[in-house]
Structure formats: structure tokens, C-alpha cells
Image (cartoon, rainbow, N blue to C red):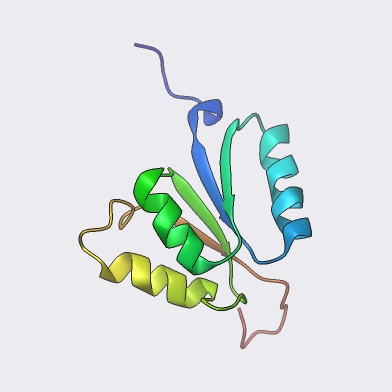
Length: 100
């Protein structure tokens, strides 16, 4: 059995901005990650991550109808969800301290 590598990761990108999803996908692909899925909001991501279990989730903080914070809460609070313990990375375009 070979050692796992970054190319083996499955990443789920959650962002309501198509341009940001494509930009994040390009960055991840340049790092060698091949298995990348995306969702345009938190509800779609909750459903997708049930069927296609990711290794990492990257989500925008400000989205609608379900933002990244609510998505993370819903994911963590559902003990039956298979991605309950998957690491979630939150991104935001806001630089103000109270947002971060």
C-alpha cells in the first residue's frame, strides 16, 4: 500500500460566486488535487457531502440562502451526517477584525 498524497484528496468547494469556485479549483488543481467537487450554497453542499464524502471542505463565509457559518453548524450538529468530522476551512473576502 502506498502512502497517501495530496492528489488523493477529495475537496468540496462551497461558494455562491462561480468565479471564486473556479479560482479555488484552479489553485487546488495546480497543487495536484484532482478530485474536486463544488456547490453553490450550504444546502447543496450538505446534500453533496452525504453522497460524496470529501476529505476537506472549503466554504465561503457569506453566502445565501445558507452561509458558511450556518452550513458548518448544520454539518457539525447532525450526528448522522457522514461528513460531521471532515475539516472545514472558512474563507472570506472581509478583512475587518470583527468578521475574521
